[in-house]
Image 1 (cartoon, one colour):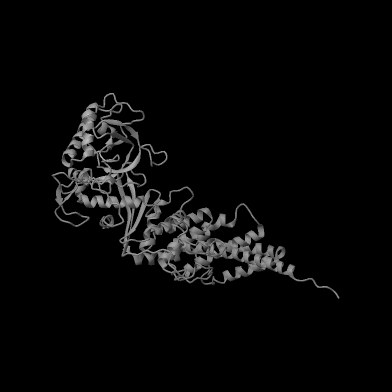
Image 2 (cartoon, rainbow, N blue to C red):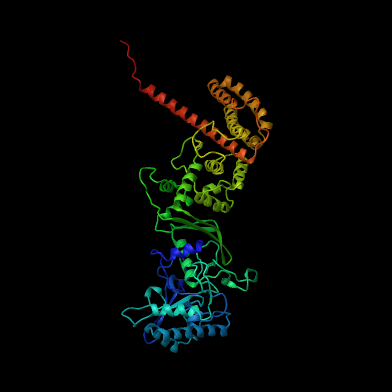
Length: 590
């Protein structure tokens, strides 16, 4: 259970554990008082706040979820509770009641703890009257807390967890627990007959499109969610300790730059059961530079391991938001060795030559780039990222819908860029259409497929790419090429169009035999090498399935890359000959 693993993570030595029922809250104003309760002033605390931040800097202070009713938070709350400040249009009686309950909570905590700083705050309230109070820039919606002078040899902030005032922390934990807690088995820890929360404490922050206050991972606040008389969070009974644990762990993962990444409307987090370098997986998913991660999981590919991932198991959790609720898009729980193996296959499966027939310096694509290959520019592609991530880490097959999208996008654009060719090869490999060890990453123009029709589809793609080269050699650059006119039909119903296309190419070749005999000879030889793949018995297939259309696309891509590579190599060879000729010493007659 993924929540159990998050709770276990929260108990680890690396976790920044907060006191029970404390949370990260943005505090804007400090009410500065002396030990005798006299007011020194109001201080606008913006130090350390992000640029443009209008609500103060983040502190760890007592916190709770306040969905309805009057519920004061100990020592740190908004201006209505702390000072009784009334914003325009607010109900004066409700504001007064909020302020009264906040003061009453302070007094109860003071009596229970006998903390000197709280005694100073209690004395402040003996003197405080919100009527007539004016302070420039104060908004009752801002959060306030106290800074107390004269109790120690420095000022102190009794609300802050960093002050380590354990008596205050224990009081707040006991106060918020209540005396009428329901006892059930906690689904996260497995402990039986323990108090469970009617409403889980804490919110998950940092989920795209989530509410500012955060989103709930477990929520059942409507009748359709109730069952067997259980309402709210009791439908999934979880103890406070467990709820705070997995909330804190998840918030910490989302905050970490190298333990999460964002893909459109979702955030994905990663961790292992033991200390590790798992944050490097972030590069695999977010950057087109994941070869470091490939080295990591393959071991010593280059003679040494640049990073290390250890531990028994690997975990990942993908979340998006729907209103105030968190939506689990995917979760992964697999052995770490399996992740290594799956990523190794993932990178190998997508490797393919670039459009110039070379294996590029950075041959692997990020999940974002692969997902983007299925959509036109500007379209929302992130919805596909979840499936790609799952297969990259867990293994398995990719949805056929992805192949269909990539094939349709190629037919619409009349082009097959490198990242889309890599995606098509990846899908075919993961779905066992192409065996992983068939070297389609290289310029192998005669790979072996399980079916003869698949093989014919591949060579049909090669033939179309060559016919394009013949047309270009004969006519030069024209507005509408045969690819613009015929790619869709040739890839779907090759038997209907290739006869006419080959006939047109023969006319172009006759022209080239007169105008460019050298070019004619090279193109004619290549045409014959491709046509020999089609026997009189097979000819051109009448129709191709979606899978075969994707194989057609790979044949088209490989042949174009081969033609470009030949042109580059030929040019380099000619340049070398010129240099060699110039370098030869001139002969001198005797």
